[in-house]
Image (tube, rainbow, N blue to C red):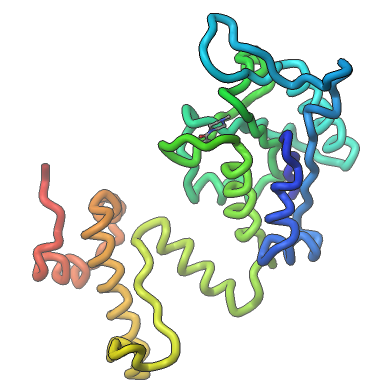
Length: 259
Ligand code: 4HQ
């Protein structure tokens, strides 16, 4: 798997190549990253990458030409390295499709992508028309650049690669990934057994696997019903709520009503 990142700030991506699960996966050869700086393909004395918007208004717009040349460089390098598929060219943009786990899963079973990180007010539309295949957003808020979105995509994808997590973590990953596709996670506790007068819930200390699993399931159901009733409705539609789950929700008045 390979990510090519078009960015004015390549150092930001040290965050994923130097730290934690993604760094270890990189050392294990499971993925690689290459950054392409549009400033490096400029030819003018000032190395210009942006200009004022036609029609006026605040801020600057990234020039199409250095972005197009950067994507061409990324494509050529991927082909040189033996990539078989044409990589998607994904622009981070608040007008894009909201990034979610299923998109990370799809990317994880592909050869990767070329991620475009804009700065300033955005990028010239003619670059988007010529090169971009997908526009993705982290959510409904405004960042100062696409880099944090690209980091999120790389991180969420790389941790799904087979062998990225250590042995003990892969089971965790399965349940977490499965949990994410349905229900919010339950609370977690570790030592000490009592912290500032707050005890660990008794079922977790019982040693009875079935009792622990039921407690966790009920906590997930409770938290999900309170915070994300849309996920409860989706789970019900998908048929992943058991009769026992439905009884738990109904008894506590947590079953979302039709409205
Ligand atoms: N951007 N999800 C980059 C975002 C954003 C988001 C605004 C993209 C600024 C230059 N990126 N431009 N939301 O807010 O990914």
